[in-house]
Image 1 (cartoon, rainbow, N blue to C red):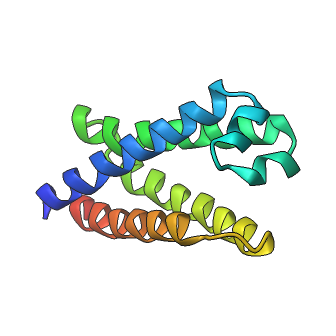
Image 2 (image 1 turned 45 degrees about the horizontal axis):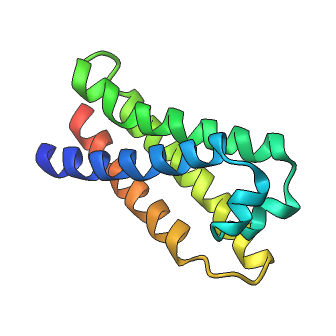
Length: 121
């Protein structure tokens, strides 16, 4: 089960790190051009804060497992990403956009939460 947790967390971390870095480093116009239409209706600071939350979540998925310090942070980070993806799904539904990608990421993060909780128990 630990191998599954590592695989899930590594994949999630890569996805959220890339997504977060994109939101933090690109302008609103470039994000809209990249297919993130929701950013045109959101304040730029909110988009940047979401990006920072994704980066911190990605780090929280792997660093506790790598260091063996505060391992409880890995499932906590995964749970926070579930909440973040819940907001993403709600935003896309409200805008009548496709919401499958954040829904799938949220479900995978939920699986990470469960596996991580079992690992530390």
